[in-house]
Length: 158
Ligand SMILES: [Zn+2]
Image (cartoon, rainbow, N blue to C red; front, side, top):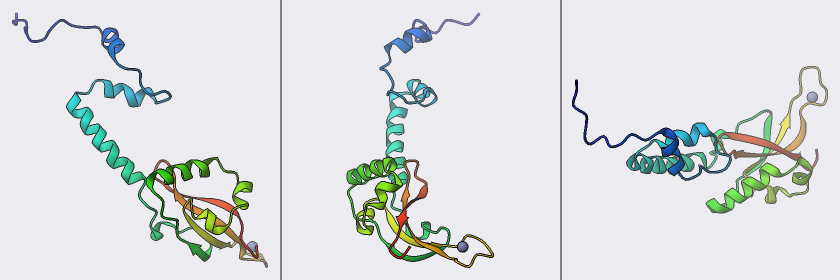
Protein backbone atom coordinates (compact mmCIF):
# COMPACT_ATOMS: atom_id res chain seq x y z
CA UNK A 1 0.00 0.00 0.00
CA UNK A 2 1.67 3.30 -1.08
CA UNK A 3 1.89 6.19 1.37
CA UNK A 4 -0.55 9.03 0.59
CA UNK A 5 1.17 12.13 -0.81
CA UNK A 6 0.73 14.94 1.74
CA UNK A 7 1.53 17.57 -0.94
CA UNK A 8 -1.34 16.48 -3.18
CA UNK A 9 -3.96 18.52 -1.31
CA UNK A 10 -7.66 17.88 -1.26
CA UNK A 11 -9.04 16.71 -4.57
CA UNK A 12 -11.44 19.08 -6.28
CA UNK A 13 -14.06 18.16 -8.84
CA UNK A 14 -13.77 19.54 -12.39
CA UNK A 15 -17.00 21.50 -11.76
CA UNK A 16 -15.48 23.28 -8.76
CA UNK A 17 -12.31 24.12 -10.67
CA UNK A 18 -14.35 25.36 -13.65
CA UNK A 19 -16.53 27.57 -11.48
CA UNK A 20 -13.51 29.56 -10.34
CA UNK A 21 -12.33 30.32 -13.89
CA UNK A 22 -13.18 33.63 -15.57
CA UNK A 23 -15.65 33.37 -18.44
CA UNK A 24 -13.96 32.80 -21.82
CA UNK A 25 -14.27 35.45 -24.56
CA UNK A 26 -17.73 35.41 -26.08
CA UNK A 27 -17.96 33.37 -29.26
CA UNK A 28 -14.54 31.76 -28.89
CA UNK A 29 -14.69 28.01 -29.59
CA UNK A 30 -14.52 25.74 -26.55
CA UNK A 31 -11.76 23.70 -28.19
CA UNK A 32 -9.63 26.86 -28.05
CA UNK A 33 -10.26 28.16 -24.53
CA UNK A 34 -10.80 24.90 -22.66
CA UNK A 35 -7.21 23.56 -22.93
CA UNK A 36 -5.92 27.00 -21.86
CA UNK A 37 -7.67 26.71 -18.50
CA UNK A 38 -5.54 23.67 -17.65
CA UNK A 39 -2.19 25.42 -18.31
CA UNK A 40 0.28 26.77 -15.77
CA UNK A 41 0.87 30.51 -15.48
CA UNK A 42 4.31 29.97 -17.03
CA UNK A 43 2.86 28.23 -20.08
CA UNK A 44 0.05 30.80 -20.39
CA UNK A 45 2.67 33.55 -20.57
CA UNK A 46 4.44 31.58 -23.29
CA UNK A 47 1.11 31.25 -25.11
CA UNK A 48 0.63 35.05 -24.96
CA UNK A 49 4.10 35.57 -26.48
CA UNK A 50 3.39 32.98 -29.14
CA UNK A 51 0.02 34.58 -30.00
CA UNK A 52 1.76 37.92 -30.48
CA UNK A 53 4.25 36.29 -32.83
CA UNK A 54 1.42 34.61 -34.74
CA UNK A 55 -0.45 37.91 -35.10
CA UNK A 56 2.70 39.59 -36.38
CA UNK A 57 3.10 36.76 -38.89
CA UNK A 58 -0.52 36.78 -40.07
CA UNK A 59 -0.44 40.56 -40.52
CA UNK A 60 2.87 40.70 -42.40
CA UNK A 61 2.74 42.72 -45.61
CA UNK A 62 1.88 40.95 -48.85
CA UNK A 63 5.08 40.83 -50.88
CA UNK A 64 4.90 41.43 -54.64
CA UNK A 65 5.83 37.76 -55.25
CA UNK A 66 2.61 36.70 -53.50
CA UNK A 67 0.28 38.74 -55.70
CA UNK A 68 0.28 36.40 -58.71
CA UNK A 69 -3.13 35.54 -60.11
CA UNK A 70 -5.05 34.87 -63.29
CA UNK A 71 -4.49 36.77 -66.49
CA UNK A 72 -1.98 39.53 -67.04
CA UNK A 73 -1.34 42.56 -64.86
CA UNK A 74 -1.75 45.71 -66.97
CA UNK A 75 -1.09 48.10 -64.09
CA UNK A 76 -0.60 48.01 -60.34
CA UNK A 77 -0.38 50.29 -57.31
CA UNK A 78 1.31 49.41 -54.02
CA UNK A 79 -0.68 49.58 -50.77
CA UNK A 80 -0.66 52.73 -48.62
CA UNK A 81 1.62 52.83 -45.62
CA UNK A 82 -0.81 52.50 -42.72
CA UNK A 83 -0.28 51.84 -39.03
CA UNK A 84 -1.27 48.43 -37.75
CA UNK A 85 -4.44 49.89 -36.22
CA UNK A 86 -5.40 51.66 -39.46
CA UNK A 87 -4.77 48.41 -41.34
CA UNK A 88 -7.18 46.54 -39.05
CA UNK A 89 -9.89 49.15 -39.52
CA UNK A 90 -9.36 49.01 -43.31
CA UNK A 91 -9.51 45.20 -43.33
CA UNK A 92 -12.80 45.21 -41.41
CA UNK A 93 -14.21 47.76 -43.83
CA UNK A 94 -13.08 45.73 -46.82
CA UNK A 95 -14.60 42.51 -45.50
CA UNK A 96 -17.99 44.22 -45.20
CA UNK A 97 -17.82 46.18 -48.45
CA UNK A 98 -19.88 45.13 -51.47
CA UNK A 99 -18.52 45.19 -55.02
CA UNK A 100 -20.87 48.09 -55.79
CA UNK A 101 -19.33 50.11 -52.96
CA UNK A 102 -15.82 49.30 -54.19
CA UNK A 103 -16.76 50.42 -57.72
CA UNK A 104 -17.33 53.93 -56.30
CA UNK A 105 -13.71 54.18 -55.09
CA UNK A 106 -10.76 55.40 -57.12
CA UNK A 107 -7.68 53.22 -57.57
CA UNK A 108 -5.80 55.46 -55.13
CA UNK A 109 -8.57 55.04 -52.55
CA UNK A 110 -8.47 51.27 -53.03
CA UNK A 111 -4.76 51.18 -52.06
CA UNK A 112 -5.94 51.69 -48.48
CA UNK A 113 -6.97 48.02 -48.54
CA UNK A 114 -3.96 46.42 -50.22
CA UNK A 115 -2.19 46.02 -53.55
CA UNK A 116 -4.35 47.26 -56.40
CA UNK A 117 -3.97 45.36 -59.67
CA UNK A 118 -5.52 46.04 -63.02
CA UNK A 119 -5.89 42.67 -64.74
CA UNK A 120 -6.91 41.46 -68.18
CA UNK A 121 -8.37 37.97 -68.13
CA UNK A 122 -8.64 35.25 -70.77
CA UNK A 123 -11.90 33.27 -70.73
CA UNK A 124 -11.15 30.26 -72.89
CA UNK A 125 -10.21 29.03 -76.36
CA UNK A 126 -12.36 30.13 -79.29
CA UNK A 127 -13.14 33.60 -77.93
CA UNK A 128 -12.53 36.60 -80.19
CA UNK A 129 -12.70 39.12 -77.37
CA UNK A 130 -9.85 37.84 -75.17
CA UNK A 131 -8.42 39.11 -72.96
CA UNK A 132 -11.32 40.75 -71.15
CA UNK A 133 -11.25 43.73 -68.86
CA UNK A 134 -9.36 45.53 -67.60
CA UNK A 135 -10.69 44.71 -64.13
CA UNK A 136 -9.56 46.05 -60.77
CA UNK A 137 -8.56 43.71 -57.94
CA UNK A 138 -7.41 44.28 -54.38
CA UNK A 139 -4.84 41.75 -53.20
CA UNK A 140 -4.59 41.53 -49.41
CA UNK A 141 -4.01 39.17 -46.51
CA UNK A 142 -7.24 37.97 -44.86
CA UNK A 143 -7.69 37.63 -41.09
CA UNK A 144 -6.30 34.08 -41.20
CA UNK A 145 -3.15 35.37 -42.87
CA UNK A 146 -3.89 33.96 -46.32
CA UNK A 147 -3.26 36.11 -49.41
CA UNK A 148 -6.54 36.63 -51.21
CA UNK A 149 -8.02 39.01 -53.78
CA UNK A 150 -11.29 40.82 -54.23
CA UNK A 151 -12.85 42.11 -57.44
CA UNK A 152 -13.30 45.88 -57.26
CA UNK A 153 -15.09 46.67 -60.53
CA UNK A 154 -14.03 47.46 -64.08
CA UNK A 155 -11.07 49.75 -64.67
CA UNK A 156 -11.16 52.63 -67.15
CA UNK A 157 -11.48 51.21 -70.65
CA UNK A 158 -13.18 48.05 -69.36
ZN1 LIG B 1 -12.58 35.75 -73.96
